[in-house]
Image 1 (cartoon, one colour):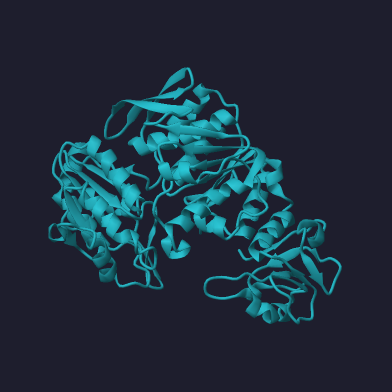
Image 2 (cartoon, rainbow, N blue to C red):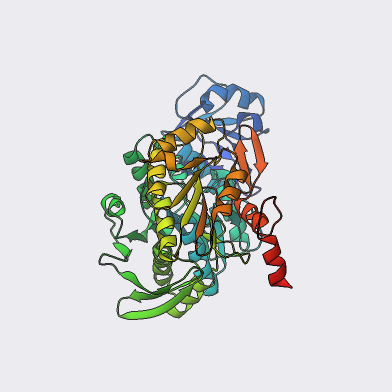
Length: 503
């Protein structure tokens, strides 16, 4: 969605964008706007955005010829329509979209979740706690956009400014009291969330990712922590005290920070009681109060997610008993260390892990509940951060017993080049196997598994398509594993077992 319009009173840019300079008019009143010159309609405001590949300022004349009656730009230009000159057009665009939608976030409490790993699960847990407490809650995340009644698959983790405003508007119409938003570093850097004010912000952790976009690790970490600038004056931040980068980069906030942790002193902490392949029980400790939590999702990383969500629940005045019920209600999150159970004599999991830290965390979680070998099949995305590839290889080689490297979403990059980058991080790359075809690689990994072993298929998680060049090829890792285990694919030895077991 690159165009947004409303039918209510027009928005005054002079009132909305303080400090802007107006050329050709004292003010500009807006009822609709667009950032794509080709999508402009008669009467639209065109907002010229600078991107990595092209500059919207170069398409202003096209926008005007398509009907744009005014322009927002970052510099004065000799054009025939009124111009609003701003220092940051992306920030202005976000604010304009929110204003055109009627500032829906002002009618609900907005909660943001950012970080390198764990964002999606933490956002799901927060939404579950709020809904368990009877709060009408909308959710925008990698897994989809929902207004508490209807939902749709997500195009981006955090939608573009007009889509974000559109969905918040839908939440307001559904009388949502809360909106939970998973906020990516791209969204923060591109100011998609401009015009929003967050009641709470959770920073799960800061690791290595997206250097293809941000350039350096410092830039990436800086982008993440800019989300704190969108906190309301009374807003609270939740920080992982066990994550040094989060502690180092989190700014000092006037209302302080709520901390969570397992190893260091924190406001909320947890202690594992028991852990199995299909569930774990832990004690959630908040001050002088301790409550047991039993969740079908395993690993220390999930404890951090639960603590993050619990901290937000407590900040919203929800009692611990309700918080526990909200945490336990989330039986799984699609593609997040999701256990695939088809009666096979070994563990099988599909995980979205696509960073060195995430792979390490998932493999360590599985090591705790695996008696036999861990077999890991994974790859790395093409046309994305290449610096992390050898680090991913090192993380897997040091934690898995058998490694199969394959394609992830190669996009427009040579899969063998990606694989070579991954193998450059290995100390004993000759012991790993390279199988380019992902279906064949997953089937091979599953064929190696014996009783008490565990197979982890990592990298793509919930994604239903594999991106190869311009093509989107239907390929869901979870379905791929199930088809093999149910003997729907050639070479699977488990079909007869399934038939006998189910007779």
